[in-house]
Length: 224
Image (cartoon, rainbow, N blue to C red):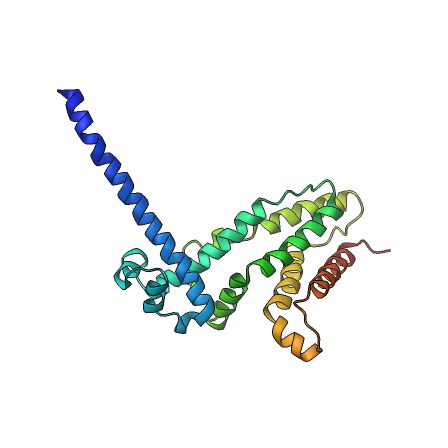
């Protein structure tokens, strides 16, 4: 009797698992669609109707899973930071080779912005709103960049080896690297017009990456 009851319960358990998977898939699909819509239309233009249409879903599902349009936008910002953090954590960096490690971090940051234009666009949007949406996230501080801790290890290793200055903060160096990569990517169209050259050309991108590496290495070099 006990075995028959247990067997009778198994299909229900499977159905529950299937429903949970379907719900998660729906939620992730809405999140992906919202990322594209907000990146294209901004916060104001990225309406619930556009997002549900892009997700091939219904408006009520957005409110069910995210509570509001703002709640959805906050999760979009959280998700793009989370993906960058995951990419940073996957970096194969050797602090015992500090110069090469620092070059790798610089190239990673530059390439990440270039390969993920939605990241830059969405951060531009949130900065236009003075960060008021992400400030409401209870998880915002969880997304402080792992690259900062990596840079701290590299700087300590380089200072111990006598090839880097010992008075630098990892946070400051990360801001320098991020600002150079971010500004180039976010302003490449207007800069191309002002400078009279296409900054999206592979040669121009490679040149700027080399400039970034040079600037960073000059910054960390010990005084002569």
